[in-house]
Image 1 (cartoon, rainbow, N blue to C red):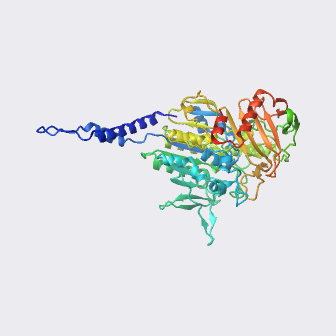
Image 2: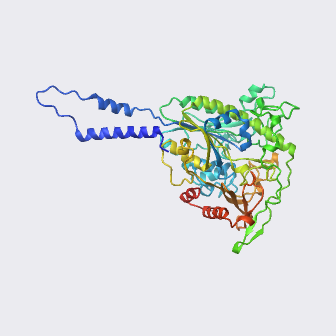
Image 3: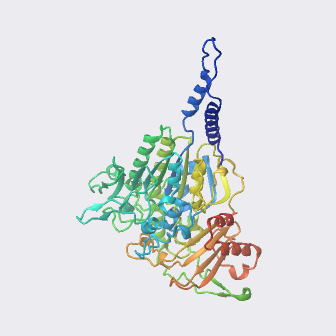
Length: 573
């Protein structure tokens, strides 16, 4: 992207360089003997001073990242739908791995999970971690965060909210809590730690005058407190307060800023919860359904009673025709064992109740979006997306994420800001494309290790050619105690989803599952979906695998496995 402000800034810098070079070559002007000393022309000096003092006109940027947000919730959010109407909406927006930690690591670095080596939410093996904060920092990802590149380009960077899974305080030898380590690439650091999943009663971080990480307590308000007092400590609202404070501090700076706001909602709670609030998806008190009125409360643009299971695309679709298919020599196919063997324990009543609570949860995020937009102004790029989607009764997988299907991999991607042409976009984008896009907008170089591609130019040119395919990868890991994404409240089944790689195009989805869960062998089987219906209705691999569209998907899928960054980028085109 070559925005107008970038070209102007470059021209100004070139002019200063040229002026200085000219002065060095020509030297001072010679004056004839006996003549009055000529007054040096003030114009070039004034021009140089004016150029040198030119305010950095590059735009501010804000990323608002939601957690486990499914697309059917978007229509309930007044400000988010307003953003979509006023900005660019990418209809084919996906995530590289529909699981929190691998997805966030990929977003922060612009790399695929097979490059970050962050494959799961938890470390599993402490000596050779495969996920969580341990893996993220062990394998050199801290220095590869796009925020480091933005800092080097002159941006002030801030982070607020949920960071990487298992980035937590520890207990020292004296029994006191020790703050987690400082993370490079961020000038302001207000991470909300894992207790924030419950909504109330958690800790956050801040940087002291010595730039060291310190802890701040956010105690659970007493049950005797009124709703306003309780909601002042609600995780989304504290995230909002940190974000607004950062914007107010830096919006008048000469240097531009970048701020990531990572909300915990609408992720389910874990373990602890506010007394008397038994839902697995706890909304702010201002949005909760009154006692005895399960269809009440605040669901935004849609009355809670108007939210039904019909909104969950593919809800309850039987899985008998979704079993994967083996591909043998000569193109012969045979049915592979089904991997969706979990008990269907999520009832319609529970699914509807949780769907409505999730809609109530996102209303506080929507109010935050309103305030952030007002504080940041129209000259700021604001991006709204999620780390992954969420299934709630689709695929007969109960509730959760991690699957390669649209319910889990497709996320909103809405962008407003200067020179953004409103309207829908058909290009395929992935969350690994965000890092190079932010660097592109900043006029900073994109490192060669980045596997994503910038879509910045499509913000102003909606029909510009772009990505045509999105790739997914996911690694099986038996859930361990403390695993944060079991989604027990909705019968979560993430621990049965096999490892897979997948490619999604306009004509279909091809998934190669590895049914061998030993981590040593492989047992490949395939699922192929045409989207004759708007969900993964029936596996058609046996009948379609030799057709041109399926062969194209297979060629790209095979080339994707272990691909180098440049190859990964090329395969999406």
